[in-house]
Length: 111
Image (cartoon, rainbow, N blue to C red; front, side, top):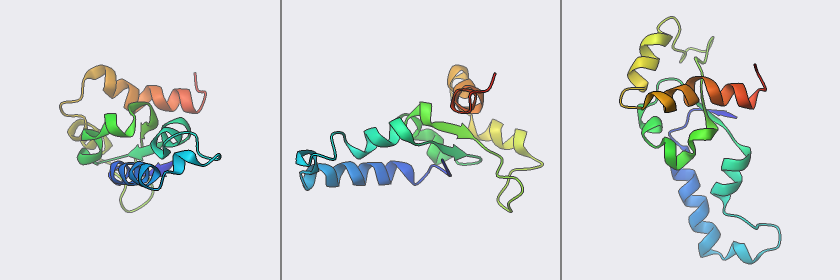
């Protein structure tokens, strides 16, 4: 898991491009595109990034969770609710639930 998600679309696109361009699919140790490995094994967090949320389907909506980044200087505390509201503008309610709650519950086996 890594903080921030705005960088992910570029890296996934770059890695998949290189995978095809260098014919890495012919190598025995890589059987899937890098983006497929990412979506199977990695998660990213967001706390204020509207650009990253706009690319949520490219990143993988099941691989994104919310964070406040507290106590770091970039954290959203004490205005986390405002940041969530701003970041989630235009995102369907079911997807908001997945990003803000359900993905973390599944990932961390919470009940």
